Image (cartoon, rainbow, N blue to C red; front, side):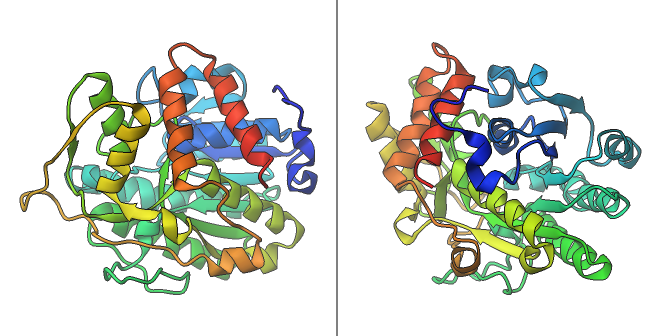
Length: 356
């Protein structure tokens, strides 16, 4: 891929150059961005996922289907997943395939549990039976914690849990990952991020896609939980944490395997209404309306991560302010129809790398 003045193979001390990397969920929002970044780092990327949600997804507009090994499959299909491991022999695995929406989990609880728990079990079984995987990253969520609406951030050793099926499934995925790591001495880390935003996400029931759809249609943005407070971060921030973790694990798998939080600094932990108002301000037009009500499914009101561990042992830190996060996110949505989306992604990744 285009280098834009940076020799990307030297990033992360060259840990990813010429590595075979399996990304499950590569057609999704974060998975597509990670696949672009890994390709820029000189990896041979093998993707395993369901079809993209629609033709405007980042994966589709970047044309990634012919820029990596694109395999369509369900993470619940253990036999198919086994075949992928035996055929491609990945050295690094990033597991992002999931049912990722809280409100969808209320409608499809069984599918959510099957995908997020047994899908993780299937993946870890393949890793356990592989003689080639040197590092495995299991992507879960900040919602894996037993949320007590506390004002301080959750640390990696805090109790896991979850009110809704999605959150509970991610807590279970964490327990499964820990059990495999400890029982079989596997190089496995679980990574937990906050509310991730960026270009190319068109999921229903997520605030940024909801904002974009309303703004493009000239409609008021409907906000379900305006007072809920979340840790907001640009998509490249947690992905940098995942890549950093994997690079450290390749050098010392025992020391760096474990659970890791990757969240933003305090000034990026704000309410949903704050985000919506900033989106309207940066976009240049629009309005919003409060649609909160007692009939809505339960969602956490306050959620925050303590990232002391990742900052201390990995050197992780937030690079982009909340303002820059929103500007780069909206840049994608303003330019995707008129520009080369892959070039947009490469440019944003290159600019981010200059901050590392």
